[in-house]
Length: 584
Image 1 (cartoon, rainbow, N blue to C red):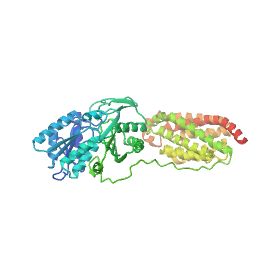
Image 2 (image 1 turned 180 degrees about the horizontal axis):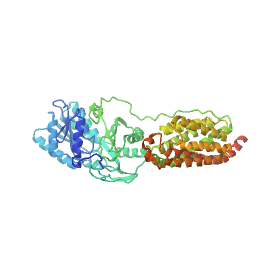
Image 3 (image 1 turned 90 degrees about the horizontal axis):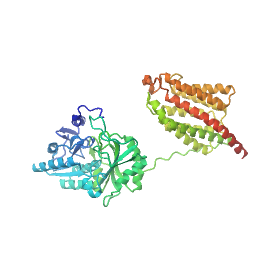
Image 4 (image 1 turned 90 degrees about the vertical axis):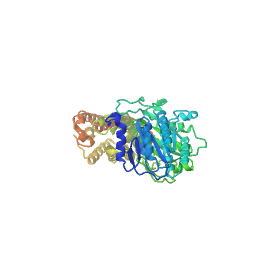
């Protein structure tokens, strides 16, 4: 539900008033909507757009130089009244005639049409432009029944630029109808939207599913399927739009990748990354593409793709300067817009170990990293939930990302013939680079310190492994400043190191010593539930974490436990490999 609402019946009016207060340099509130605070020149065509509220920044966010002269705002998802339209038009008129723009919905068609008739009777020269870009709402043969959705942005921006250039009403109207014919939109919804004051959404989309062919007034769409990968979603959107190429369509398009209210900008950028190569493959050049929220539907989760095929005149108008609350830029000059591959990963040359045992050691480290990555991927969600109790909930993701990168880097190093020290060092840097954050830095530096105890020309010995884990512990404590009792990974790491050293010094075999140390680490990690955090982000929410173990300590215990099992397996395998390799 809408959290900041007040009187639901006054929500749209309050939002309009608040908007006009914030942007008083651009707009002035009038009955039914807003007009430019600084009107255009006398004799200019007045472009007046409008429709129901709930779509911000459409339509009030597009009032300003280079775009609309005024906007009429109805109630949520409701056409403005005939009287409101008349009132706003009268105050927006500059003497050059009026172009009324709105989406092709029954209420808008009726009210804007009646208002236009009445205004004409008063002596105003009024033309009408109903946008019809939604390919999901009707077939091409029934285009007059199509809805206007996110294509409103492109169409009205181009019309506004034409009027700003000083073109007369006939020319502006002709351009409006042309760009309307050249515009196509298709969208998907991941969940419905909620009317202010209501406790439930207008419709629901099942978890992990998406509705195809959404509308921006809470319509649930025309089909449903599972949410695909970004690559497949980009292909679905593009194919739907390209299925209706306008006659004589050029290869240059204005493109808007639009969020519908609660789909984050970062998600849209991920989708753009997948879409860009598809555009290039289709032979299309995206001119000044827009990615963001431009025509929304309250809090709907979803996105839409709009393409407008440009000719020379339409492209000039699309790139013309604009100054509104929601869209502001100077003249856009021609720039390269073709897709470029992401920068290639820097090639690293690893020195090959001079001994067969060293190369086997590198393979051993790579195998351990592979097993670690699998275990942390499986534990990602659980670690995230534990971390969310008093942290930011990202520990599981960071550990999964870091270990996956370490696995790949170790595999590359081992395949190149690197020894254990170099292989672990490569994994350490990859872990830190990909995991990021405090945890990533500490794990990266800890593993790097561990690698310094190893020899590239020999299999790691129990003594080297014990020295390595101690060096890792000391490096992590030095960097993080944590000590036992602070409710961090140190609470699980210190008991592990101490138990491993104790068991090895007493003559225990490595697998036995490591297993006992891993058990001590797991017990210590579980015991952190009784501690209050004294380090990191969790410190400020300490009481919330009481009764819950620390995610960092649990992941550390998980890792050493996994490594212990892998050591037992690899000791047997390495003996067999060493026999074969030394025989060669």
